[in-house]
Amino acid sequence: MTPELFALGVSLLASAHWPQMPDVARMTAATYLPAQRAVDNWRRQGALNLDLPPEQALGLALGRDFRGLSRCVRLNNYWCVKKAGWTGEIASDTEGHVAFASAAEGAAGAAQLLRRYYIDFGLHTARAIVSRWAPAQCGAPVSVRAPARRMAGRRMLGPEPKGLTTHGLGSTLRARWLSAHRPAVGARKRGKIAGMRRSVVPDRVGRMMATPTIAAGLGAMEAREPKAQPVRLAMLPYPGTALGPDPRIGASLPPLPKLSCGPETQRILNYATNIASGVAAGPDADLALFDAEGKPTPNFAKALFNMAAVEIGPLRATHALVDAAVAQVTALMAQRQSR
Image 1 (tube, rainbow, N blue to C red):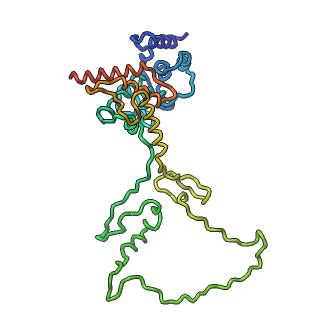
Image 2 (tube, one colour; image 1 turned 90 degrees about the vertical axis):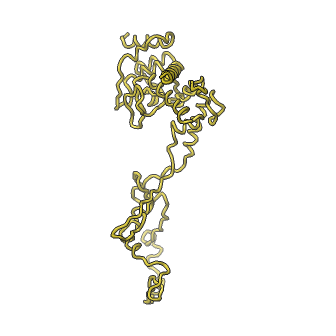
């Protein structure tokens, strides 16, 4: 048995039976590995702080993966907290999730953030907390109106059109000139109404007589005009998006914007319902995480435990990890009040 495995076994036994013993696995410095998007000690931290059977925990420490290992587990961040200068923060991934040196420091950061949401921001329900903790990623594109421009003392074509006419007539020099020189409707000039003059040249070209063709009925040799295809909204370009190939018209077209928030609303509701499980009557009820004096109630640890179960599901953090984070936040609050 190698010394590292022996140390891990001692740490596992200590965390299970003698909580007062120091964590041997945290004695070495942690390093973030950008290529793997993980902290180098995440396996040992997971074996100690995830609620796993002993044989599965030992297998994880030995390098055996299993289903359900999310990216936040590899970051020692079981609550998927975003970077904000937390204690133990050593790096962050491309989406801003913090890579913590240990799972204990990640749990402490999540506990501090949840306390801030409840006390400082006044978010007392599970739905309100989730709406800010993991907000919806949807919404209709916002139309930006450009300010009206002036040049040489003359007003030009006002706000430039956006959307479907970005590359059309509305943004051309010809359109701006016509707009600047168009006559006012109803204005009189020398006693006559100004406007466009009608043509006095008669249209002498009449309808041509239909004549038969000698190629009619010859199948493939018969000339047929292709039917005009209707223009659909999905075939029109959308500004500011990545283009993708469309075989219908032989050009590159963008994907349609995501307008519906239905799936995101359901996700937030499911998340909030899981947080409120065993804590409150529902996602819109007060979680009562703190009492009138600002001290955490038992609901605080329960809600924190439920949140980790959602973020890294189907895995769960150990109750010992959550209780240690709550105790650290309580001690920090008492220290601040004593000053």
